[in-house]
Image 1 (cartoon, one colour):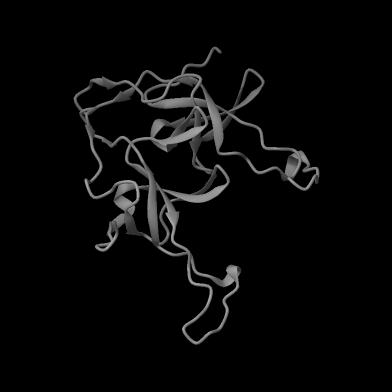
Image 2 (cartoon, helix red, strand yellow):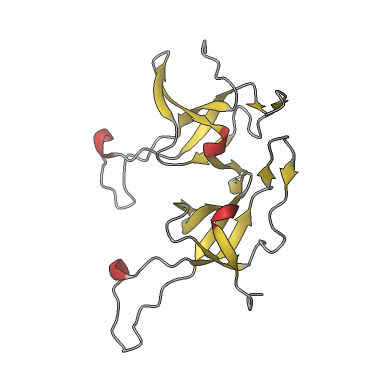
Length: 196
């Protein structure tokens, strides 16, 4: 490829959306949702720090990654549809079929809203409010600082911790058939005291 991204930018080739639903319905190309999973085909030289030094990227060519649905810029290079995005837009990478969050990202499983009111009225799933309470199922390696060092996540933020988080924060994802949410550490308000 004759194009080389600069700084902390990476070039991604999206992994194609399935053309058939689980029920066997064929999905036309125009109706396919753009996938937020891809493979890195090029990386920049690294993140330029305040002091002018360059921090190498945490990802490499060939990594399978997940990124935000609306992240990056779609481009056509040498006849191929690609996506250019910053390393910070990458949620994590798939390693041997297991998703590993990057940086200060945390994966949580929402604690489900109750399906019945205190008065006994059943609430349909579509009317349930998304809860801002969850349980951490994966954590990233830590927040990358300006000097390139990694600050570990708060000691209270560990796998299994029950947390409260900002209602509109994060990105909903489906991993291994499970509906989960990817957040930044800063979106977590705190850990519930009686959680084990």
